[in-house]
Image 1 (cartoon, one colour):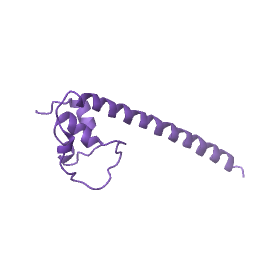
Image 2 (cartoon, one colour; image 1 turned 180 degrees about the vertical axis):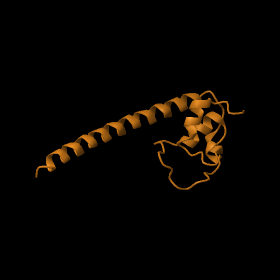
Image 3 (tube, helix red, strand yellow; image 1 turned 180 degrees about the horizontal axis):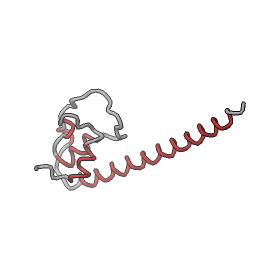
Image 4 (cartoon, one colour; image 1 turned 45 degrees about the horizontal axis):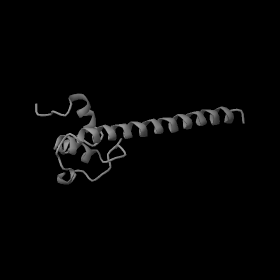
Length: 103
């Protein structure tokens, strides 16, 4: 019984941190979605013209909204068509390089 108390305490602390980080990640997803929506307002790209996705499996670290459509609305192209460029890496590329990817 001596080790059960500290183990339960450690698990409780870990669960609290996990829940906290889940909330913070959701806040980041919502902020990113709102930012992409604001950027899209300045473009004329129609997300209904988005090509079919190349991958059918769920990607790791996928955001909670349709990143492909949001980025297509901003850029006019589907970054996920680039090999190994999934929905979680595409926003990072735009964040680092900006929306002008012609170079």
